[in-house]
Length: 145
Image (tube, rainbow, N blue to C red; front, side, top):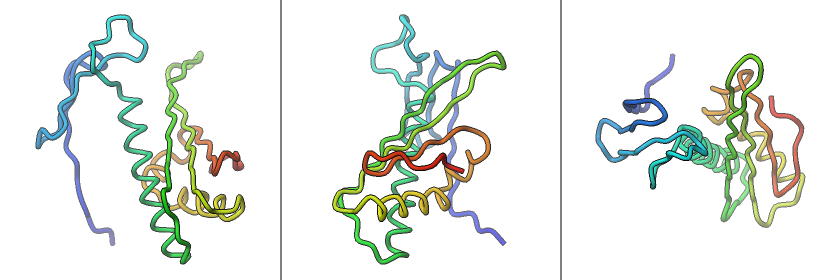
């Protein structure tokens, strides 16, 4: 039986050219379409927000699997590159997770990144829906499942 740990609440008004805010108003953001010549200064877009969330969530998953495997990681960094694509069927996103694990050998870093991908809630939510590419210490791993 699952247990609810937390629920976030956010509202967007005006789509990509409007604004978004959380219920507690800690985040209040102007939005603009990526690359739009009419972009409001200081605005963001859904892809940037998704990238921040995925990078943070994946970082926590890395910490979790490292602890479970009794591996010490320091200065771990996750860069999420979220790409907005369009083809004949419409718009879609793809993600590359570039994970830097200083001090870990290639195989050890790859093992942790692959394990984190199995437990990360964002990875679980996107699995089978979008292309996710994993990289560990600048080495591309097999296509993520």
